[in-house]
Image (cartoon, rainbow, N blue to C red; front, side):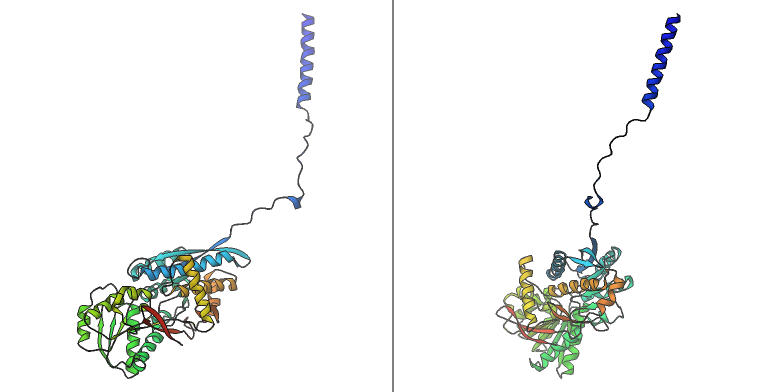
Length: 404
């Protein structure tokens, strides 16, 4: 028994010694080799900040072709700017176009305008129509978001006192005024009938035309109105026919003007047909078909280039055709310039914050756009806005003159 006890004790001592050794400090592992600080992979750069620019135009309804033309102008500008790279305050940014459809309807226009305000866009290009542009402009003003209209011509837009409202085309005062003088002075109109579509644009340009005709000594023998969705004009045209006009002026868009020309021909009304930029489109010619005689239609586009600037516009139209497989309808170049002026102001201000780049935008002087030099007056209107007088010959729009 004594031997067994001693052996057990000896084994216990050995086991304890072994356990103590196991619990002792283990040999230190060799630390992994570390790279010099200069050789370490730098963290990836942060993604570019996104700057949202809103665009609103009628993408549905009778003048959706003009709305698509406008949106394509905006997309072309955004794509070019992103491809070239835009840096604001030392940081690269990505521009994002947020496009909405207002269907040329004032109520829908304010709804989508509020949607873009809530999305915190940095700026707005649009709307196309005066009737949607004017009510939406208050929402943008209240939010402090700059708005550039590429096509709304009603003078009221920039005369509401909103510091956020800008326009890159001539207004109805210039447009209607020039057409009225041309009707009396050049076309020698003696008896002139006036029709408008009751929209802010149509009624506005018709009123300015009427005032200009009367100031030039002409006589307005009839004043009629329709709507921007009408298709039957026989009643008003029959009334007008009885007045024997030599000129019929229409304040409205091509979607109504084309069918109206057809019905004028069917009623035997051979008067010249005049209108503003809303009818100064190739679409009018398509809609009117064979109802247009040479030099029967006269219109004025609220903008225009000449001389050396014409080469830039021709290049734009070529690139536009290649990109979208479609010709420029009317306002796309003005939308294109509007987007680029807005972004240029952000770059110069080192900020896409509307409050910071708005003063720079307002101070724009002689920006070289494809539509010509652009500067804004104290109201936000383009200074020395041009007008392009056109007529239809052999089924094509031809320029008669560019006036300022």
